[in-house]
Length: 424
Image (cartoon, rainbow, N blue to C red; front, side, top):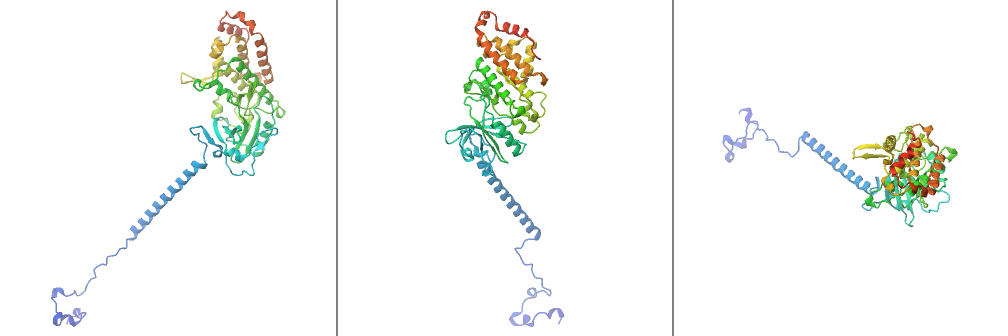
């Protein structure tokens, strides 16, 4: 028997077990491959990697959504609602509250703690060069102004030293600093609230919003009061204190209707490089390249711009025809040189009789304050004297000018300007 057949038992060929040749198993049977559910390694690896990627995306999306919800509730800058109210809690970090209490100055009748301030609702009054200002209504019906400073570059000790100097100032033409708060995250200053708002808001507010017209006497009192306040500031801290940011939005009306100066000395706390807002404000003296080095003379320049603003009713930087940008100081100088002085004054002032001499004298003083050479500018005490003299003498002599009522206002002003030199 061939060896190839010896592998199978003989019973395969006997009796009923005989099968046809075609049914016999082959000499070398080959097992059919077993079907398996196992995937190849590359496919399995691809599935694992894909699952990891999908899982990572889901987790990342979940984290982002959580952060977004948290930020909308507790973080970020305050957003004004339709009622223009926000919670100061959104702006003031609550970390370190026990170590950083609100510091009140002597004579302050206010009584609240940081928790009260955090619970207060607040209206955003404006965003200025050095921070955002809020009107805060406390639960005991007390209303204060809270200024939240930004980009403070000095340390705690230097900050507190300035606050102590400013907090001791008590003058009817200087807005009193009532309290301050310092932490690593937040620096706050608390002032009294002035119901009438800033001079800038009163002078440039829209008529549709019920803007109050400033008559000549009011403008003169604003100028006198602000000058007195700045002159007093210049005597503080051994004559070293400088306001550093004199402008209409930092001046308010005190109960007697005179100007009252706020936001003192903040320039020394900020970056030495003037911000774009400060550089383009129109109040900055041309020699001032480092806002921390503001001097009495630079305050005089800024005050001179304020005088021109009160006289013209125009902002220090304004546009003509919606495109051309006009610098108030340059414009006034150019108009005066062309002997069109009457075109300088706010048309709202032309309704008041017999004030031409006063306006001309204030214009001369304003132009003297904004000369380019700092040493040629008058000192603030002299400015105060000049303004008080304008109000005292000309108010008493207004009746004597009635005889000149037949002469047109432009003719009177031109004659007054021609009779005296105007600094250029």
